[in-house]
Length: 286
Image (cartoon, rainbow, N blue to C red):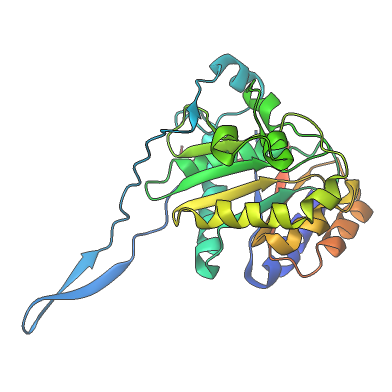
């Protein structure tokens, strides 16, 4: 479809300064330069280096994931040596630059229709962000109709977001560290009845605020249902800072994509990820 209409006309002219990118089969932003006097009448240029974030998990359960399962399901961004990890690092840098510019820390990830790969993009992007020295990442499975983050990661836990929403467990009990430092996952084990009503409830609003505000270095990534699946995405949009749209090449029709963009309305669209693109990528540097 003309490479998804040139990535939805470069994400609607880059969402009036947003971005569009592609994920097939990284550099970090340059450090800020500041001028600081070291003695009267003398100036020097000092490079501001981000302070590394150290995380110790005392209440959050730490589990080790099955590497063979992750590889089978294309979860690869935790392996910096994987030949495809650079694509998610590039996406990470583009996303973080825009979020930092606006002071945003909550990112919703959705797609027009099913089978676009949004959950896989969300997981790999969260892992890539967690590799940054001065960041931590929290991935929340808010696809309450078809939760799938646990399946991709091979997490088998009794307590999840279901129990938090029901009031029978705390956030700390439901969160899990999947063996990658600075990444925490809040999984959902089972579909939730009346999903859109739950997502628009004050309880979910308070939950998102708590997740966002607890740590200044945290980026909260929220895996949402497809836009056209129901009104779930529209229900939660007022609670998140920005949105990333994942469009699978050859999966959604032009009409479906246009309808999805219309439903996003005035949301802060960071851009469009063109997923499952089979066009050869020329990465001659590597």
